[in-house]
Length: 147
Image 1 (cartoon, rainbow, N blue to C red):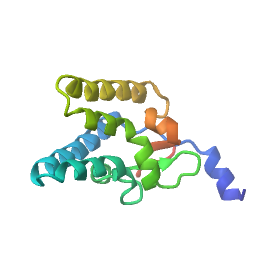
Image 2 (image 1 turned 60 degrees about the vertical axis):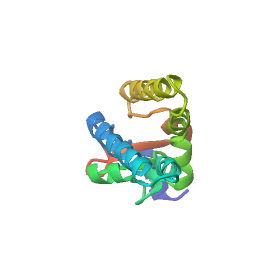
Image 3 (image 1 turned 180 degrees about the horizontal axis):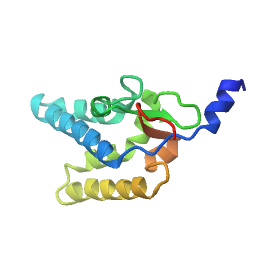
Image 4 (image 1 turned 60 degrees about the horizontal axis):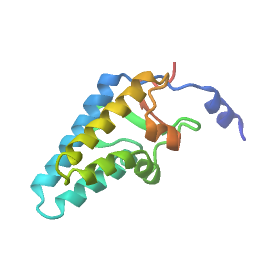
């Protein structure tokens, strides 16, 4: 391990402002809804694809995160989120997306997931949700990455 890798491990990323994360994720959900409505038949799959790989775009930035100046990084190295990591960290949202076609349960499950994930973000010192803990990523503000 070289000196810069050791130094990156010692640095803590600052917790991102929750409002910025909510706005960024809302923008991403609007994009998904637009894909679902605008492209008949394949819009559902285009929305699912964006939901899963969005955080791997633009060096760790979904469109919503890019507009808000946020980025998903691996908290051990500071490297940008990859497509594979994005799929793993957003898989819980994809389950909710799949279940949306089932009456009642399809509406409740995504709300339960959003509530659960929000509580994890609020309760975590670094703002980590389940997907972040699983793949060791963190959402950071590009302008204030370190405390």
